[in-house]
Image 1 (cartoon, helix red, strand yellow):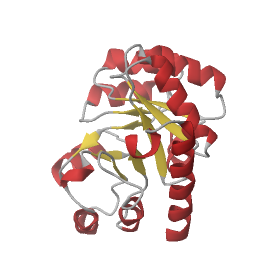
Image 2: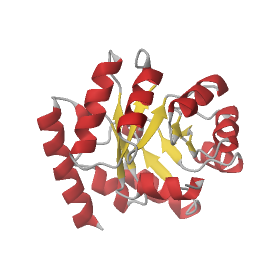
Image 3: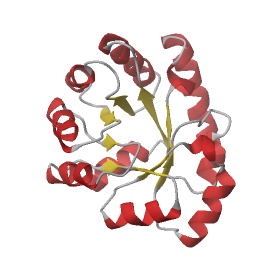
Image 4: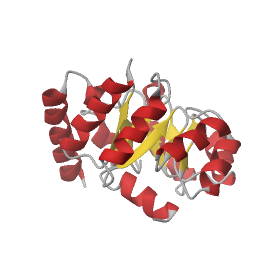
Length: 206
């Protein structure tokens, strides 16, 4: 799968899950819950202890899913995540070495940005998507205004996105939203209900 095909697959549902846990087993369970509920893509944050082992387990057991790595801060972490099976990389900030490493192995990278200046720089560095982080610091109207000047920016709001406001972010021009505890907390049954509700809302908003 080419990078652009992976990006299209990850953003196709307009949302992907983010898993951050205290143990790798908890990360795997949370990821499986949202995948079973219908999501096609989920990111495992490298702040999870032994996150690379969780990535490897998910990549092996869920070959049809798009398993990514989050909080990727340097080239070594990017390489380790890719070797474990990560199909996309996400960072909270902009690290050109992470972008270069991902692209070297055909893996798309979504670096973190917070301003129009950072958006442009990330695009110049070859970013495949732009993680607006934390999204809770602005609102969808801000994104709509910025995209009037930068309509080419493929923005992915993350951090503070909820089931209620995700459709507003998409309507403002976001290509997708990254969602963590708003989807994954409370166990498999609760996560499944939230994923189903969110997918219904996003489908209605299209």
